[in-house]
Amino acid sequence: MPAVKFKELASDTPAESSPEIRERVVRARRVQLERFSGERIFCNAQMSPRLIRAHCAIDAESKGLLENAITRLGLSARAYDRILKVSRTLADLEGKVSIEPGHVSEAIQYRTLDRNFWA
Image (cartoon, rainbow, N blue to C red):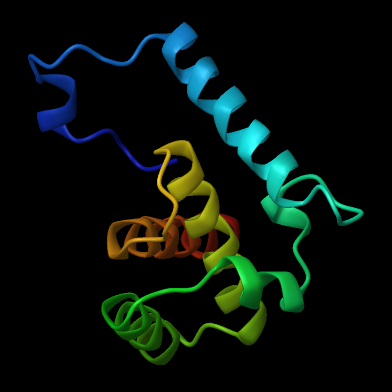
């Protein structure tokens, strides 16, 4: 794991409590169960390429972020799909209907960390 940044450690903003985090996760899981009610899956991680295309639409700015990441980081098609799945989950955790550029950017960062620390 990377070191926690000083600004985060010294922040005056109170951290989200465990019960608050749990509630966000429960809501996101409920959304995913509803989303996949007609499918044989129950969460974003299990999406097939067909379901990714159906539920992970992104705007031009997000596409640019992904194109840049694929090109500069040499990511595979599989990594592209995983980034979209994580982006969808991040949007669900925030209660957003659409995936936003911030979600894609955060998912790319997680993928980069994954490559750097588990390669």
